[in-house]
Image (cartoon, rainbow, N blue to C red):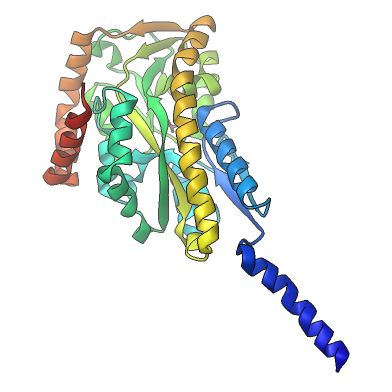
Length: 332
Ligand code: MLT
């Protein structure tokens, strides 16, 4: 009949339109640890805007900042399971899935962020992200968290001896426990969303994080001393749930990978600019800042050498050799 023909035609129309663009209406959850104004959140915001613009508003990226959906360890499982689609977190914490990621927590590895960019954007970093696929994750880029520094409520740190005996909150990854044990501290692994109250209640004396994270989390309210130890540089991995990735169209994947590349460049720039501003703000807020003399940094480096050796052995000598060779190529 004519009516059946019209109905059949009408049913075909939306299909044709959808095929032309091959983008489905979707809302993706993007969870991360820091709050509004932090370079991590600004990068996520940029990514969300780019994805929305390029998908004609069909793909919405909803941000969940401040660890409201859980800490990093919990988030990794959720992204693997597909209940959270996207996250960005310290690359080193992914050593729970693939042991090579431990290299990103090696103390005093990178002299500056540019060395880290060369390694992460090159074959080494891309190769590590490729190892995540069988573990349910797609690595879309490396962002910048920055150099970690120690804060505490007890006394200024200028020498390695000043770290001794401090009860320090560390990331929930065994290498952090080993590093801070080697430095003489009493390390306590805790998820990031619990850190402010642990410091406030004096369950721990201190913690370590980049200046930008210390500022956004307002740790100056609960910490007096800030030592610029710059002991670890954290790249962060932008990760996407492979469960969802495998169902996306080529058009959708292109929108997401292009947005990730652009957001990565923007995020790195913002994060590096904010690192110095954050230090000035923390001084103004009353934190007592100490710089560490090069000879003292060398003593810290000597103390953690056995830890680097231990993890180098588990990562594999060849991989570590390749990494050092990549850094040497760009070291000034
Ligand atoms: C942590 O210490 O858990 C992280 O470095 C927090 C962050 O992602 O800024």
